[in-house]
Image 1 (cartoon, rainbow, N blue to C red):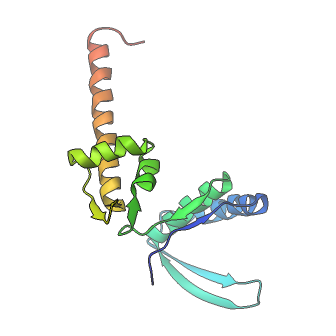
Image 2: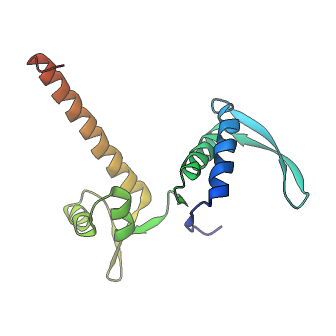
Image 3: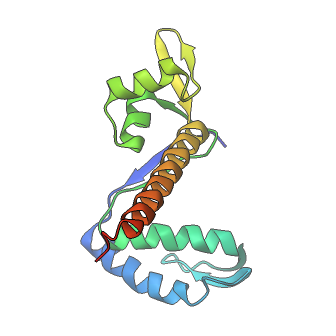
Length: 150
């Protein structure tokens, strides 16, 4: 199977169906595995067992679809262009290039183009988010110590 990105913007009917399906599937959110019966519009039927983490992924997909958000499935080993990585981090492409050149995020060059691994971008994002949480906790504690709380 080749790695490819799949993006889909849900229709109004799909948004409603996702909302209904999400409610049903959420009952099984904490299960280690779930056995499902499938019946397609073509008359085919099957039984399958899904691991609990797959149910969590499906719930995430259904939740986003129910809000009308585009869905993108990207394998963790996927390489991203600098623009895709910048979009994921919600920063400008020039800012991302600076992060790459400083060594904050590993990259490789393919010809004149830089490529970054999705896992490296997600690791950087988690580290930045963790630093923000720690800073916010420190500021909250400092403001409470100074009697600036509400």
